[in-house]
Amino acid sequence: MITGSVQAAAEHAEFRCVNSVLGNLKTTIVGTNYIFKG
Image (cartoon, rainbow, N blue to C red; front, top):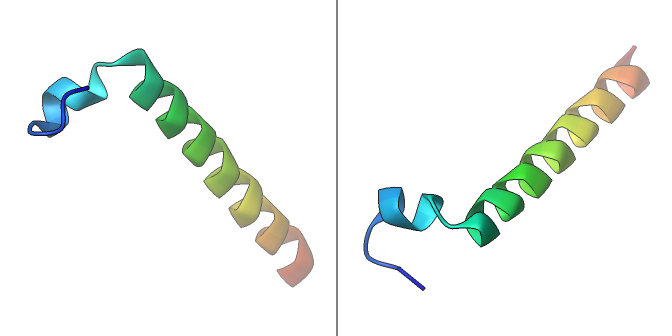
């Protein structure tokens, strides 16, 4: 695991997967908030 460089760490599949999941969660939360605020 590479911890010193953000660029190098971002190239690993595990980090890309985590970033995808976090992005999807953020989109879901924002979408849900939009629906409730109407």
